[in-house]
Image (cartoon, rainbow, N blue to C red; front, top):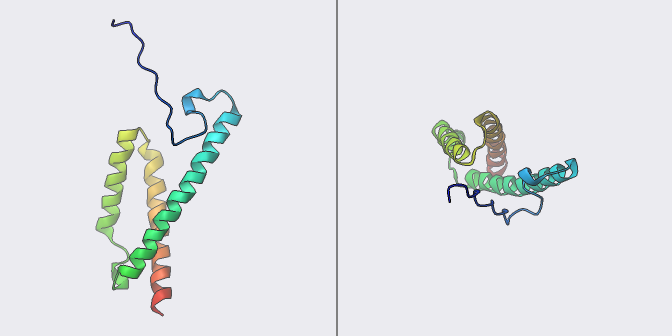
Length: 115
């Protein structure tokens, strides 16, 4: 019984492209990367919508940048990255840059909607 192979990993139904471990050609790899990029655009667009909402809701421009919230987001992402096996050397700069860009966008929206 101890010699039994581990159960095969079920394919993730959210994806049409082959799992990374199943890729045999660069065409397979590129299909996966392109699929993920399409998903990321949709997710980042939704995140941008929350920046629009924050700019609408926050009563004062001085509260647009929230250092405590930035740290909370980084802590949350780090925990999630560790859970999923995402390298923090990839995740941290991506999230820091995305947050900085989102904050700059939120300032623009806040200013535009208040003038």
